[in-house]
Amino acid sequence: LRGSMGIGHCRYPTAGTSSCAEAQPLYTNFPYGLCISHNGNLTNASTLKGNVEGMCRHVNTDSDSELLLNIFSEALAKVRAENGDDLDSDAIFYACSSAFKKCIGGYAVALLINDVGVVVFRDPLGIRPLIFGMREQGSGLADFAISSESVVIDTITCASGDNFEIVRDVAPGEAIFFPKGGRPPITRQCVPSARLCPCLFEYVY
Image (cartoon, rainbow, N blue to C red; front, side):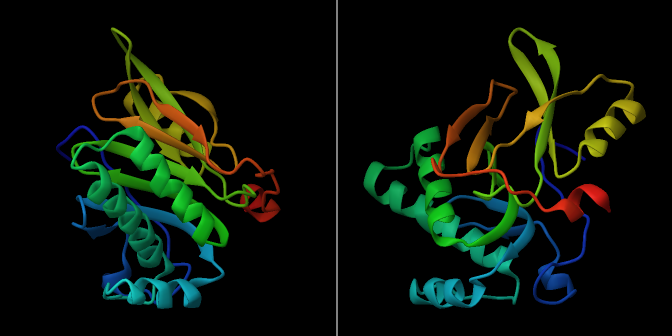
């Protein structure tokens, strides 16, 4: 694989069908190139679909991940219309906060913004797990790996011989932006009332 950043998804859809059209990551070029990988379920998906269609956006699948992608991209488009093309962390966290306000359910999300970086966030109750690790590059830079399960980060270390160290779990209601180029991540707690109520099944199976 070429490039310095990427996201992937390796499980079955949690909503919709198992068609190729719903295979993640999902992509939109509005208002920037955006890809999403989403683990979870949005319990208000039917309401969100009506909201997205009300924005004159066409919904191509039955996947709640596509709805989440549209909610995020619409918020970015609003900031772009107000502030121009410069996309900074405040704009990204605004879009994350918009998603938190509108999306109900358990979810862990990774979004790649083309030529900008990767942003991840976790539902306000921490129902779905999300963790990240890092490998020092030197000169204040690092490589980062984000996953639903810590075993993925351990496997990268075993397979490559490189030492990725687990940093911590993403907190409930927290968003973390990883800028391109290995610069230090920027974090923000977007839901002050968030609290940890994880799904026990996630830690057992």
